[in-house]
Image (cartoon, rainbow, N blue to C red; front, side, top):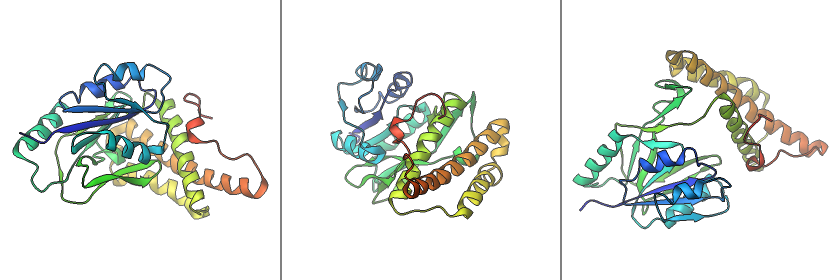
Length: 270
């Protein structure tokens, strides 16, 4: 018999995307959903697919993933986000791999392909965007600095060919809103760790972020979509550093501090 797999999903107000995600992992031996007290129909959707649904106040991406890791009953875990889908080709590749036996492998990584504004993105910083999401939990856990969590595995990791699909943003407004939240999290984290603004970072990081995504990683081959992605990423780098500067001014002059990223509005770039 092949090794059993627990699919683990952390969610918050994902009623419109969650069903597609959970349908794509029905082949797993167990689905575990950890919700951070959604106010929409997320729990109702989750319970259509599994009775392993739990709630936990938000601990951050790292804390939330390590919590759901402990709730899973099988050794092998497949981490998914609610806006992702396992492609049929990846499903078949995983099942074939596990039917032969995992051998010395303690983890598997695979590309993630983004669907953005009606088009599959095939270049730039968004592709192949390789993610390590399938691993033996006895040898791996989530680490990283908020909001950029990552799975770290102690042992051999094999790369599979086929992708998970990522329906990351509904539209440009959604893209900007999340950029706003993530840049706040990053600025607060850096400030708490003693990071301070260097003016060269404010000027050079946005510029090089654009060059990396649009030129070096050939984002221009995705046309207007590639230009939009690289430009918004550059703006995001600027936001991160200008918010770090704002926190410095808050301490010096007693201004109101940046709001917690979880309290920022879901609509309206504020």
